[in-house]
Length: 361
Image 1 (cartoon, rainbow, N blue to C red):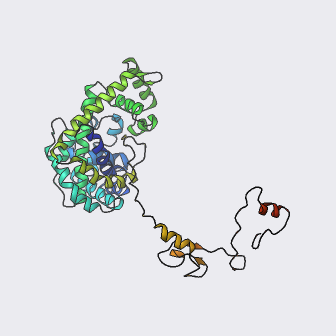
Image 2: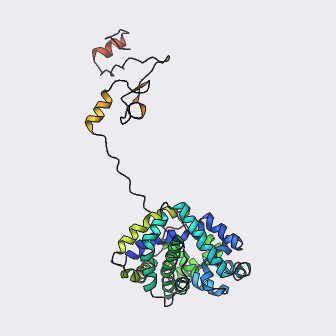
Image 3: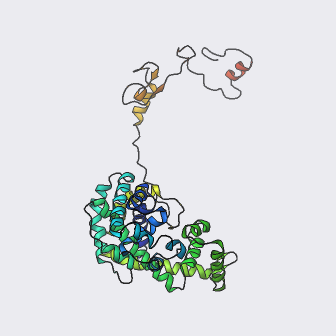
């Protein structure tokens, strides 16, 4: 297993976690717990494992959000709902959403939760506040709730490492968003609005990054792409380490893929997360009817229900016929004469208004 596996597993872990932001069941659960509005639900539910912390902690750990957007939700969120109540609500809402979106999710949870929890257990929590806070939460009884909680912890494990690397490169939260919009295909306007930055603030960040050589008039520079690639490669390297505890990490990706495809139904693409659309479900190969059976159907007489020929759903069970041609009064029409080729006697006879042969029209 090489480090690129970390990105592959992220593509199936992230959608399962992200239902908590987009699924109606989750939004309603946050509202029922007492949180008011989308952003209070977002910051309150995601930050609840940290306890009733102040806005500075949320700004530092979430990274990239405008301080004013955070402070409109935190610390007020803790006066509307206690963190323990929010934790229960977010897990129950996510479990309901996954059961609606993912057929057979209980069976998937039964097979993948032990693997995911093994990875969570062996992962290094040093410097990873959101991951460590999620790992310390008590396990719930609902297997689908445990599936969501394990994917959430691993999602935050990767995110915490990514934030540390962004800070290490000297990029603040806004500059990290600018670089992501230029390199990850996320529209700048959507990313700017979702994170709460004004047009002037965004322009000032671009100007500062231009001065440092990361941006130019026509977009990101080669240096900027190099910095971004270095950050992503190192993020993958750090995120991949705990998965090496598994005997077959690729089997985890395959087992979790159906859940990721189902959960993606509530995620917009492109999105501020930078999550790509999941690969389509492999097409099922439909066995073809044997040639002899197809010939028998085409050559068969009118059988079964009136007005059909061949069989199948139109006639005899098991065939594949089609309705017989009918005239205006319901009487069967004679078979059509094949189209004549240029220069043939039939074509010339038709042009002269003659009947070239019995049955011609």
